[in-house]
Image (cartoon, rainbow, N blue to C red; front, side, top):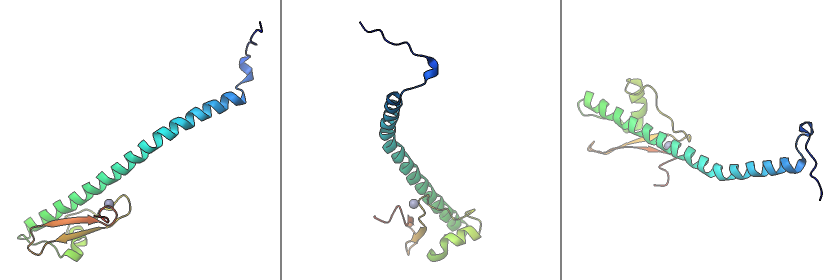
Length: 120
Ligand SMILES: [Zn+2]
C-alpha cells in the first residue's frame, strides 16, 4: 500500500487546490450577485419614492401657508427650494428629474420621476 506523503507546511498550495478554491468562490459570487443587484435596485426605488413623498409634503405645507394656492406647476420645485420649503430639490438615485403635476382644481397633486415613472 502506497503511503501518503506528509505535507511540509512551507510548500504552500498546489495549483489544483487554488483553482478549486477560486471556482467555489466564483460560484458563491454568482449566487449572491443577483440578490445584491435586486437589493440595490429596491433601495433606489424606495429612495425615489421617499423623495417624491417629500416634495408632495412640501407642496402641501406651501399650500397651507399660502391660502391653499400651490406654486406654479412649471416652477414648483424651484419655488419650494427658493422659499425654504425644501432645502434642495431632491435628485433621483438613477439620475431622473422630478416634475410636479397639479390638477386645475388643486385637489390632486402628483410628483413624477423621469426614470421611475417613465413607463407608467
Ligand atoms: Zn426616480
